[in-house]
Image 1 (cartoon, rainbow, N blue to C red):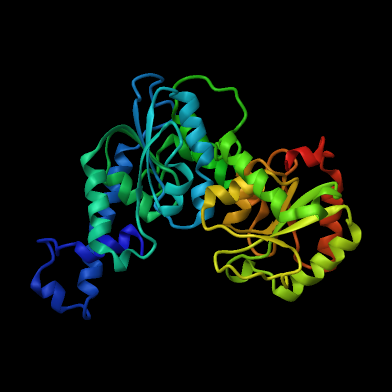
Image 2: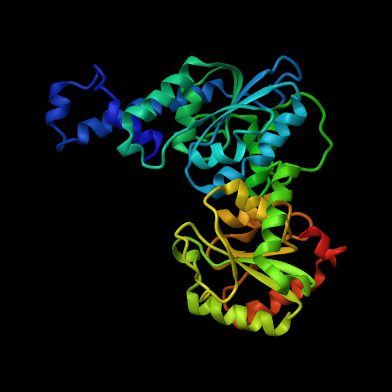
Amino acid sequence: MTIAHLVRQFVAVPPTVTGSFKRSLPKDAWRRAAVSRMLHRMFRKVGDQLCEPDGLPTTGIHRVLVCRPNHRLGNSVLISPLIAEIETLYPGAEIDILGSHATACLYANRFSVHDVFALPQKIARHLWYSAGVLRTLRRCRYDLAIDACNGSQSGRIALAMAQARYKLGFPDALVNPASAWHALRWPEHLADRSVFLLRQAYAGTIAADYPRLNLDLTAGERQAAARTLTRICGEAGEHREMTVAIFPNATGAKCYGEDWWQQFVDTFQLLCPQVQLVDMLAAHGRSQLGSQLAPYYSRNLRRMAAMISCMDGFISADCGVMHLAAASGTPTLGLFSVTDPAKYGPYGGANAALDTRGMNAGAVAVTAARWCARLSPPVESTQRHA
């Protein structure tokens, strides 16, 4: 359930909704119509408050709110470039985030982040708790509030509720048809779009490249993960040139079957006998590779990211853990069969996206082996895992 659904649970019927109007509609339709009208007014009001390009001052922004109320891991990771951009443009500012428990795990200990307002995944089961989170958010005052996602009703409602001097969000062609935003050329990748939004609104000059996905892992996190990886791989890992993790899980149509992954692993190991493979287990804790590889399991997202950061490569279908891997700094190969790699693929450095439509598992493994061979040979690989 989104914030929009939460609003529907608590909204009172506006006075303009008369008894005759209610009687003329099917059961509960009058309530949906009333909510629709209320949301339309809310979106139009906040649309009129949005910053235009060059509308943000270069100074005086000290408290910032980022709204990304979505429980999916990938969406939480994809706001990391926006967080980094805020830190760059307003280095003394303090950031709050409206997100999920995944967001809290990833960013709660980041130096610039003061608080993460975490909405539960099942809002319908936690209505009063969720309403309390939103009330707490409403009491805060910000210099800048950002709706970090284009087309999210929940993000726009949160932006409307926030008390901020400046509000920044993606323009709606219906609400703001004359906005200067519509003439701009937007980046294709989802992670770059919110950064572009902030940069275009910023009145100063920016010449730097777009920030990459980055979780700002600490040296302590990486060192603890490296020690664990050494124990996982054992003596076999000492004689391998590289360590590559495989995450054989994804949601819905993006998921490849266990037989597909088994064929992929068998072919990959024949082509790359020098590579130590590690099976990154999904949240359910069961191996989908027949328990033939060294496994690693953690429900803590930062520990998983730290473990991936110790690898020489990471291979996964398009999913949140793929974005987590890219944000850990490890070269990541994303396998795409449904979604658009240009919009969601891991990017920058040695990261790559492979459109697997029309390819069988063996052909994908051949391409993955070639990608792996292009990775820079690790210097003193055994020392990385010591």
